[in-house]
Amino acid sequence: MAFDSLSEKLQNVFKNLRGKGRLTEADVKAALKEVKMALLEADVNFKVVKNFIKTVQDRAIGQDVMSSLTPGQMVIKIVNEELVALMGSEVAELTLEPANEITVITMCGLQGAGKTTMTAKLAGRFKAKGRKPLLVGCDIYRPAAIEQLQINGDKVGVPVFSMGTKHKPVNIAKAALEHAEKNGNNIVILDTAGRLHIDEDMMNELIEIKEALKVHHTVLVVDAMTGQDAVNVAEHFNDKIGISGVILTKLDGDTRGGAALSIRAVTGKPILFSGTGEKLTDIEPFYPDRMASRILGMGDILTLIDKAQAEMDEDKAKELEKKFKKAEFDFNDYLEQMQQIKKMGGIQDILGMRPGMNTSQLKDVEIDDSIFKGVEAMIYSMTPEERGNPAILNPSRKRRIAKGAGVDISEVNKLVKQFEQGRKMMKQMSGMMSGKNKRRGFKLPFGL
Image 1 (cartoon, rainbow, N blue to C red):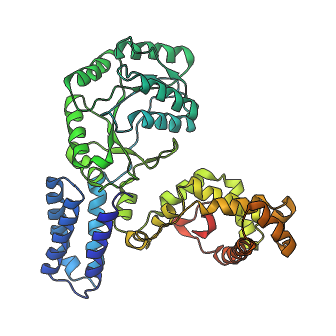
Image 2 (cartoon, one colour):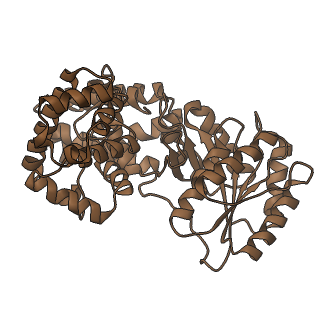
């Protein structure tokens, strides 16, 4: 996961700070020297690191901090605030024209960054919000790109306009706009050609499209795993054609995180979205405050809640919460909760977003979500009556379930025991969620 190494190093620095009752100026400078090295190793732009450390140091050695009863906590608070400011303070959005008008968005980027897939993800997101997007295949140099766009367009339920590879991208874009006007599409997303490197022909094509059409947004897709190269690409595209913002792909991969921390400061342009997985629903708005919290080991409970809410409608959540309070939920509910956890990214991703669960606690723990398959097999081997009323599961029924699922009876006994323990835990936890961590009718799966 992105930032794992950086997060662990920063948490170790701050652990030492918290252990000191009083801080001297030398303590702060020594800690920030370690922070500086951690940021540089994470491939954050050198100038960005230099300015960041100076800003934090100027604030951290002020009288309010040094005389505080908890100076270590105050320094951490300052680092958190400056990290948020570095990444843009607030979530940035693409402003759209009214629904009765057409918004044109040009997607650009180097080959291999995941641009075509991200283009479909973005279209799917707009469709889910009630818009009528049209995807347009403008990559005439790679026939597979148009085919990929059509496949992904079908998956997210968004139409794709293409004219093959014999026409100029600017003419395809013009024809697509006419098609959108006739067919009621109010967002046109142009998937332009990617190259292995930046070249003049690539830029000229984008400039030509911008001059021929009223392009409302030019969005650059960059691979977060390329670190400083991603920042250099963003700077070059912005200088040449002007971009509205950046989408970072592969932020769920083994990346050091430097791109996410540098792009805003270097280009002045915001990170709009991040790709967090391979599924076409794995696209999230980029929240600077949430990302800073994750980097500093404070968790990301709001993103976890958003993910859960996206998978469960409010009425169903309220019904399930009532069952939790009365300890009445059954194996049907248990099965549904497991399926939600898988949709949300798996147990390991969920645990990583919990406050206080830092990366060092999880790095040596491999949580294999395939264990769900065995549990699902056992539940599917139960009769509807048994799923709805677990109390009737006697030894003979358990033997039949074990045989049907292809497991030993001890596995069935283990499942039933875990289920009962979970039911007790849910009842105990039913009143624990409060404040901003509880939204109407919402419960985290299994109380996570």
